[in-house]
Length: 198
Image (cartoon, rainbow, N blue to C red; front, side, top):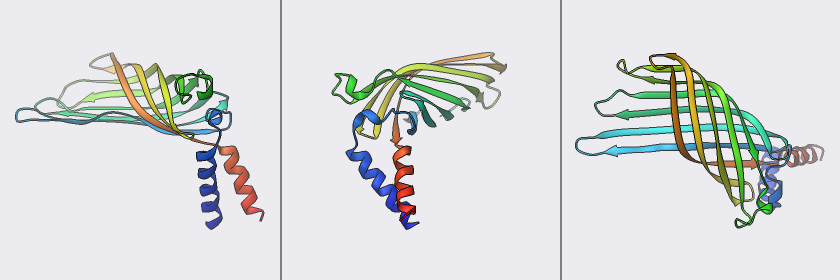
């Protein structure tokens, strides 16, 4: 356990001091989440709570191309109206058009395109209707690297759910904010083997 902790600390130091062009390199791991509609409106005549989180994990199978999985959970609870629960799970892909050094945007930005295809649904309480079926989400975005291994994301996503229920399709267009953590798995493995062989 002590050796594993030492490896993780060393990896963190290497990440903070690392070269920034390596985030989207083949073999790296990307873990993060999109955050949207967290909060609500609380007034005398109107109380509403909104929450949506989309955790994801992906592995770079090629430079700038990551494949993985994504989970979506969302809740909208307005006063006096049906509560809406949204969910989704499935494979997810992201392609970065350039590494941060190749851009002039403060040398810290990288533009990307996201794509998701999976099982999604939107269900309303009190007979408000539902749609459950195939979900497709696609959209462009930008990652801004606040450290060599942590990026803040902003994305414009178009999401359509085609399925069964009271409504056969649901369309949404949203601006989502989130973050990603980039882990150099090759360096972690190398450090782990060095520590375990000592």
